[in-house]
Length: 214
Image (tube, rainbow, N blue to C red):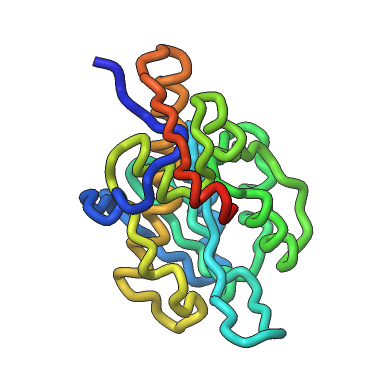
């Protein structure tokens, strides 16, 4: 039976979906000296999921540098606390690597944020937003795409928490790891569907009222 996917997933349906959380091990990198070993391991893996987090600004004019770089394999996720480690040579080597594919979403914005910390030449990054259209999916947000493909919900409750705090709590760590890992899961499944054709696209027409609002 073919997998049913939608060009636009109903956001109201997401509320009732089961929540998905990264099932692997989370390693927090808090010092510059730890980055070399972590990067060596990551670059030995076949594929990586990537994302960043930045402390939110609630007042006009307040701008914070990117706080966290999360890089996941299917089984382990490293959380690089950039506000503590800085952009070390090892981290730059990871970001500039051209061998291991690094899968992200809306990654152009993340690159700009990382470059504000230190300039680098982006390596082998693949942005899921450039791929979803091949399946007929019009949504561009991680939560909607994941719900569409896997019928599971990625919780966004921790998104606007303080990513510069001295110690990240377990909910923040799980949230950050899940977002990076989810990029790998989506990429692999999207490639499978694209190559096999094992899916049925259902086109959902927007209600006339919503079209007028847009």
